[in-house]
Length: 564
Image 1 (cartoon, rainbow, N blue to C red):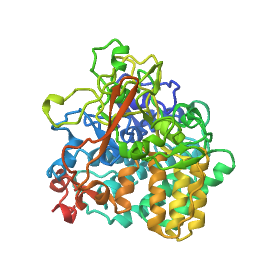
Image 2 (tube, one colour):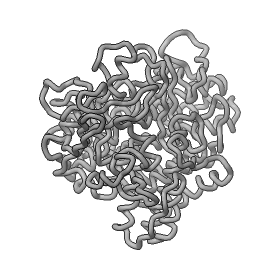
Image 3 (cartoon, rainbow, N blue to C red):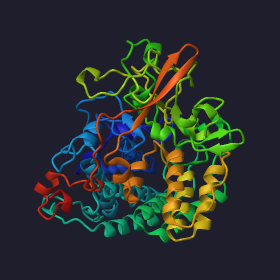
């Protein structure tokens, strides 16, 4: 009987903050089919190990390059992490950072390893190993795996365009079946959309108790809506998103609303809240992440008893991001503008869009029992960005801001054995509303487009936007709302590419921060460049190259034309 690798670490980390049991087998890193398919309980543990595909794509689960999807956009600036040689800064400054021989942004190997495991599951089921299990319960687990395989392919297509569809379910590709051509991008999207639809037909509307967080019908239709939007299949996007809206009307989902700073924060700090469609939960000791470790306010390290300046501020929000949030002046909401600072009675941070306070930490913000000092000479500090090696690992913000969204605000983090357990949000209901708005606009139905776009604004107390009647004018409103609503959630880079404005926003540009200097009892604010040279983002960066290793091992796979 053959055995396969089992990622026990992932099996141990269930999708909620609850604990779980491991397979009742000898302590080893392999499993037998007779054990994995012996019961629904065992099968659940096996299927849960596949949820690693979501952990791999969770930006808060930062890896060696601290690479976040929004890091390759105008929302984030990498401050000190390998300043001179760091992957993200090099991508924008030099010509050779992305190539078939090396591309830190590619997830090719990881996703195909995940896909291999999904295909092994389908092969096992087709081979009869699960025949004794309840057919309805088995169908749900199979739908979960089908969803995850579609998600893995979606992540590949977003980066590489058309990819190799290894989708046989009655066999597992061996060495002799390695050579296979890329499918067209359109065919890939068709497969992905069909897989989400199949999963949606079987998955339950909700999981409760310790199973909350597993894949659901709403997640399948929501991800189908996202994929259809990326694939430019506007009516398909509308239809799938409306299926999620039906669930919202039944009370499964909800746009959390409120005009206070704390009400909107519930989306990010309240487990199993009604806005979440596809959360990725972490838990202490067994599955935690290091988002706070790398991105916390710098003085947090001293509070934790560590040496000053040892953690934090590796990347920080740009002023382009922070200034996207409106400000209320008197009774009128206006676009924020540093040149109008004298009009703001509460300074630059008062009376802002409530989403600002859930997303960004700023000088003077309350943070775990203290006020941040993000000014020159303050406890959290500020430094001008430089590519000098002497600035490497000087843990200080170069933009005057710190992330708040996805920060764990627990006061027991010690950065040694207790790290962050804040959850990642792969999808929430606000994205569904924005998908409906955009897809309707693409169909020239601007009334419906603004009806949905304004739902996002009015739920936090902002006034409705005047209806526009052209795509270009509508896009200005949509782009701003998606930044304010979904910033740091991994959408911005893909938005810029699919709207065909990535070169306009990123190429030949420099991003900005705010240098704050204390002058007696007040502060001096100076908007500064936090890039030392113009950024480079040529058109070919919109689609990543196929890795050279794939081309060597697969003689039928051809390179993307711009990368030959």
